[in-house]
Length: 225
Image (cartoon, rainbow, N blue to C red; front, side, top):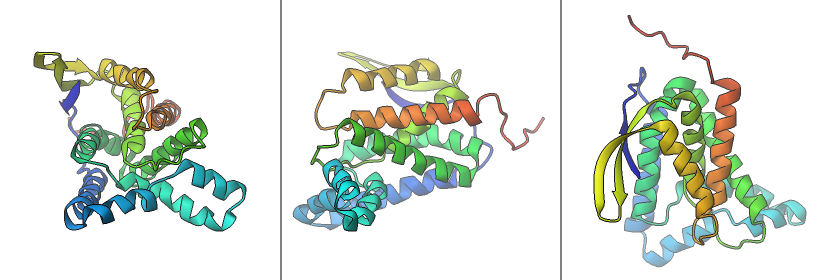
């Protein structure tokens, strides 16, 4: 299921959502187009979040703690390939603009990085001995998906549905699409190469945040009659 667009208009221009997309794309182009392949690959190790190194800096190598804390944030802007960044930026655009509209620009900015931090911590606790760098914005975006599920469960999402040779564009309720997405993270949790538990942790944070602070509360911006 590949979401294409939802049916919810926004009342404000999603400057933070677009800014995040722009920065991610610029970094991706710099990494994969302007740098040599060997130099681009080094960025994964230097700017990615390595669980084993992070835990070591907390336990014993306190001199490395500032650097490893930095990688929690820098890792959110490094992507491995075209499908990786296209998928992440598509989800960020479709679901992020409405959450930004709901939280306001400043609130959304803080929420986005808080989601990414919680996603990273979830993956760290799940696999603290991993030496594989964590990269990508999907943990933070998962938080947006969790909040969207609470705030707009009845929104309709135009989705490209692919089942073997069956391909069709259908409107799917957000509650169905995002619930299915969440449980798919558990289904594939043992598949290597993706930090599935970062997705799970980010989603749970976004969902709980929305339940606590957004559910049942109307946006502060007035709606014209």
